[in-house]
Length: 242
Image (cartoon, rainbow, N blue to C red):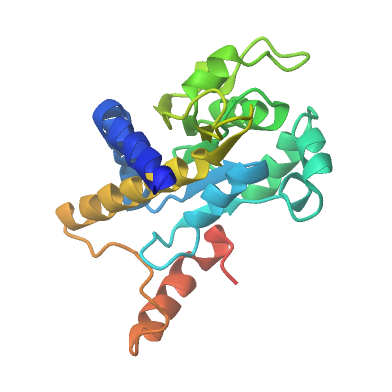
């Protein structure tokens, strides 16, 4: 039985049926910013950084995208320490200053629980600096999670737009019969699907405005290197493409 695939389809169907309005609204914010030569910033800590990377410098993805990545809160330098680091107030200010986020642009913050200090402070700083904020989160998990020490708010309560990834409190969706264990986490799959739906809508908005969408083409297909090199030249500095 291909149970994970079945559960994945259920999640994607739920996103489509309940989050379409929020996804279209987010895409509209991003498209309006990019058409005015802005940059779309995407941030995530822990496993959520995978979704930020999926939006970044990707075949079929938009070029003016800046993935706000900080190795100590990713996984490869130690998942336990990364989890602790994501809960430390003050780190977001350093990331924000390094990332060159500007008024009128959009910051998408991916956090399943939306309770940790770094994603919350990223959203607050963005609001102070005049950026629009989009949360990609699990409302089921966020509403039940305890607030982090020193915080009375969660990510979904402070962002301009909230996209629910429709995953459960546990995230993992499949119970193993005879145990208390669950397998089959859904948040990464759901987040990636949301990001690429936004990509599509933004690219379409470029076409509707009479412009070629700045989308990377597959580097393994002959003739695409010249196109991609031009995108790097145009957007490289702000999107940190090097």
